[in-house]
Image (cartoon, rainbow, N blue to C red):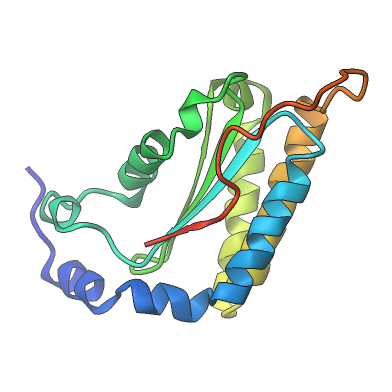
Length: 172
């Protein structure tokens, strides 16, 4: 069983939703929501952005990694439940400075893991410079490009596909 790290525990208790709102104010969230909505007009995938200030206590007690929480949020936000199995979650955990990309089955099969890692590295550079909105906006653009390549929207269909998931980023 993993041990609770006091240093990690204190770091997570110092971060709260106000800190998340400080790095991504309401205006930035609206712009990111618009980026997701515009992106989803170009492909059949779904993009969700989730930014959490810290982990719940139950995760800290088990010393759970950010990846575990990202996978939980992937399920909780129903990104896994899209009709074409090509949803992508962009997850940011502020207290641990962790970025996770979770892609559904179809997207994971078609898009090489190296592309996701490259995206994470680019985001990390932006976040280190304090450019959270720009880093997430660039990430949305990169995911958009991958989804357009592998899951383009079929212009010949009479009715567009429904938007299966909310476009606004989840902040917690």
